[in-house]
Length: 136
Image 1: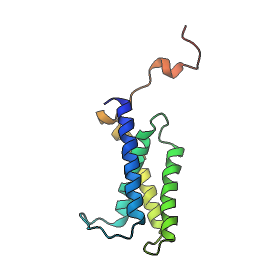
Image 2: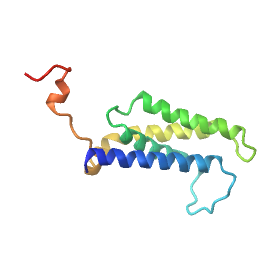
Image 3: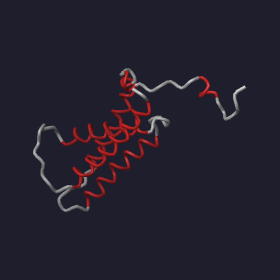
Image 4: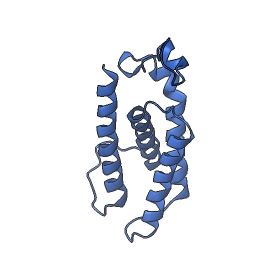
């Protein structure tokens, strides 16, 4: 897959996932449960998916502290907002589960590199050694 297409799809997916997670985190609506998984498992999966989408949305930066802190900040934001909602309850354990999802994604990065459609293009030798000087 073309790297630009993958990036565009990841960015669309990230926006959709943030919208969905935010809605589910803040709504007072009860949705029918399709699969019955423990709540913390849902947090781990949601943040692993968010981490993957964030990583592939901005491929020039590796999966490092900026992405980890942005995702953790989003998880903390959710818990702070839930603290002020009468129909929700903030939970430090939920925040820890979010962090576990981020860590799970980080541990899976080498495995994801084996999937052809998710493989990142290798930088060319010229791009790696180019320091802004014109080619000779």
